[in-house]
Amino acid sequence: MGGLSRVRVSGPLEPYAQGFACELSRQGYSPFTVVDQLYLMAHLSRWLTGEELDGSGLTPGALERFLAARRGAGYVDYRSPRALVPLLGYLRGLGVAPAPGAIEVGPVEVLLERYRRYLTVERGLVARTVDGYVSLVEPFLAGRVGEGGLDLGHLTRGDVSAFVRGWCREGAGGSGKRVSALRSLLGFLHVKGLICDSLVGAVPSVAHWRLAGLPRALDADQVRRLLASCDQTSTAGRRDFAILMLLARLGLRRGEVAAIELGDLDWRAGEILVRGKGNRHERLPLPADVGQAVADHLRPGRPKSAEGRCVFLRLRAPHRALGAGGVGDVVIAAGRRAGLGAIGAHRLRHTAATEMLRAGASLPEIGQVLRHRRVSSTAIYAKVDREALRSLARPWPGGLA
Image 1: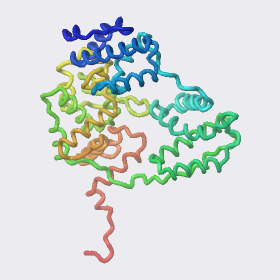
Image 2 (image 1 turned 60 degrees about the vertical axis):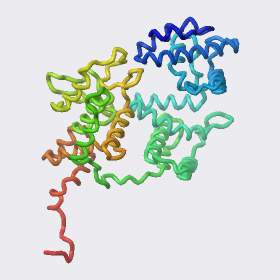
Image 3 (image 1 turned 90 degrees about the vertical axis):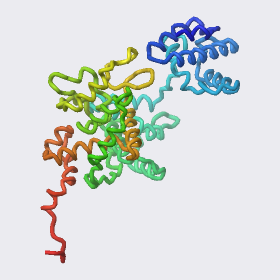
Image 4 (image 1 turned 120 degrees about the vertical axis):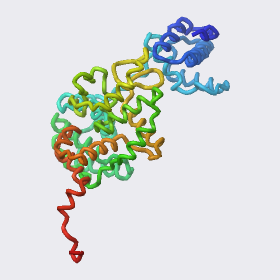
């Protein structure tokens, strides 16, 4: 950190410069990045002095003015709101800078909070599903706000149908999720006595052709190319290889891979704890080759700046857990390196199921490994076994005998 001596921070932020540099180093930022962040801190502190402000003046409006001044001064880097995230996080943690502005609480927000608690406590839905439902129904409730507040007492089937037609005119995607969310909200409003009649039937159902398509699995050569695209001599390559092995061999979902913690790996028993959908925790056998890949990823040692107990971390500081989106990005990048195009993580789940079927596993056994709640979820893989289906085919009229 010798380069820090040439960065001089003066003004209201000067007392916090040394602590900020130490915090960045603890989180795993490189010395060069630490120096750049200190230069940014020095510029912000000088700007605050010129504006006759201190840390408490770092409001959203003031930050926008600072970034505009930085761009106007000819700076070519660190001039977006994202550049200020590490510094603002540190200053807000100390109570020097004000927290982000609180969201105004109105009748819609109050009702949405009640709905959130209903989904979480009474329905037992996971946080991700709850967040999705709440965000999808917010426009519906916002449209019912008038001068007298939130008007639900006069809600009619026609109002609901008109709102759904508006969705259709907008051409909004995710129709199935939107319909499910709106049905759920209307059910909640009726159960809680906020509307007199159940209006769930006013929401038209969306055609859903279950089991209509074929699982899009990769063949053995494509899987080999995908795995070979990872440079296992590098930290990134070993991490990505382990992720791909878990997806392709065990058929895990990308969120399940992201959620794996160090304590979930039972090396002696050869098992792995999978944190699945609906907060279900189940143990699966850990194949030797998959376990070897994970061990090779962990063996060099985790960075000292690693946060939490998750097995897979971001490569760049701060070294936090890799999210489900990051796992998906690993698969996409590997597919492109292998010349296979953009491959989704779920295709590797289909690949694992297809390989088990070809190896002689029954559909119930495959469903058990994939942890399907319903037999119908596994039934789609029956289409893959073409030899078994051939015996069920009827001869084409007029064909060869």
